[in-house]
Length: 435
Figure: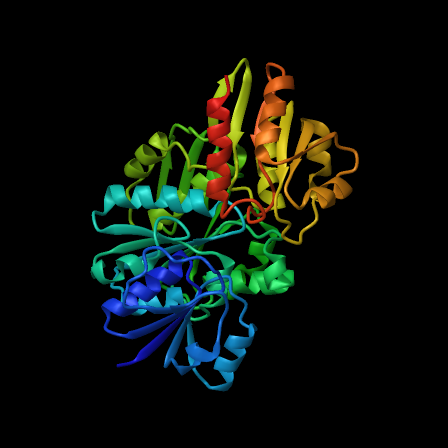
């Protein structure tokens, strides 16, 4: 019986381990955490609290995204010539599908993946959404069929570990500094993102943001048919024109005018990207228009929570980097009470200076990144809240009608929460409990 090692027991690691058990493999899993792992098949042998050499007896190692490839145990595996696969690689080997639509970008990928999957689901019965949204592909791999259309959200971590990935439709939204604590340089971060389209063929589609300078520069690296999308008029592609979406791909043209329910110009970009991807997948314009018109957005992304005495509260916990917070600030004209901070990710906060000066009344600092934020935005008015509870309490007491209370941290959540979802849920709970 072939022995498979699972390195990292996060959500995707557990799913990969359980899939390996179903396939009849002897499975050993290693995790650096000390707590017990939920949902893991009892047949999986485990170690926690660090990675020993036990995993080096494996015939194959499945690596969870986010783990550095130069950690000691993986360097030893390389010396022993043990094959190392990403969880995405592993699950795709045992999946059947008609088409893969893969979405990446620094910001907006959850919204685009969610909206695209809903459009696809309205047109094709056999479809699933996976990756960083929904569930790991390993969970559903054995239930897929030759007619399944898979829509997936992929991070730079996943793409970095899967250099041979080949989707039928790739979607690249934007690239701005992020995850530099992991990738070390922007060049390496961009290179990871490029893996989404480097193996595509001339029969495939690459949906690319025309307005993003970096993406325009690297678009020549793919052999796929490029479909640009833009907020401004294009000769070919998908673009926004006075409330209408114009589609002009190949020899096919269409125009739709959906009702837009999600705020911000960045969401127009997201809608254009989803429209282009769905159209390339063969969805009729009328279906695309109908789904967009009923779409209310994703949880934790500029999500309206409630209005109290004229103060509107928004949960943007999904903003885990500086550029996503920039997008959130651009969505409101003034009187923003910004809850910001968490675990720093290596990028400067200085790009927010102008928007903070123009639109933000007060920044409520939380988490370990507070001193760096204060240093990078020296002219802002700060309240050192330390945590979300204190920030919400202070806002409730001193906010005025017309103010916007916005949780948009620009940081990871791991200093105080296990993930951005838990952070967002905590904020919403506190706001909903306010009298």
